[in-house]
Structure formats: structure tokens, C-alpha cells
Length: 88
Image (cartoon, rainbow, N blue to C red; front, top):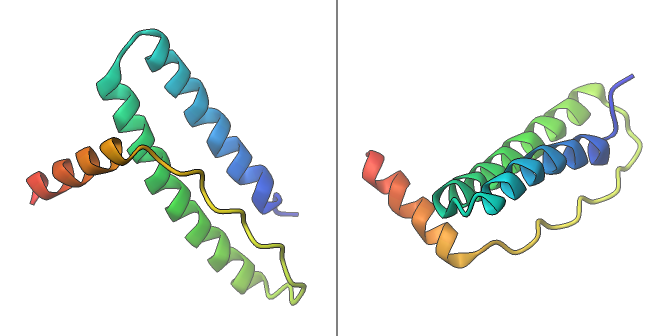
């Protein structure tokens, strides 16, 4: 039986929160920004994969909507966009 959507998202959150807290304790601002961007990217990809899984499973039962992601730091978002555009 597949794991519940919220359990998977909670696990993702726990992994990134632990790494983020370590970076914060080390005062590593760059790592914190990288982790924030990676978390948002991974969360989006994971939600898409979970939607595909749910569609293929054809459960037919309506699922509860996923709560929106917490607002992110706009400065970190701008930094992520800058890094992405520099890669092209």
C-alpha cells in the first residue's frame, strides 16, 4: 500500500528542515538559500509525481487538497532566479 501524500511531504520537510537548521547553526547563509530553493523545487516535483501516482492508481476517492507551501523568503527566490538564469 502506498504511503499517504501528507506523510511523504512531511518526510521531505523533515529532511530539509534538519539540513537547514544545521546550515543556520553554522551561519552558512549561502547553504540556507540553496536549501530553500532546493526544497521548493523538490516539493513541486514530488507533488507532481504524487498526482501522477494518484491518477494511475485510479483510486476514485477524492483526496484532501494539499495545503499551500509556506511563503518563502523573497530574497532567496531572487537569488535562485539569478543562479538559474546564469546557468543558461
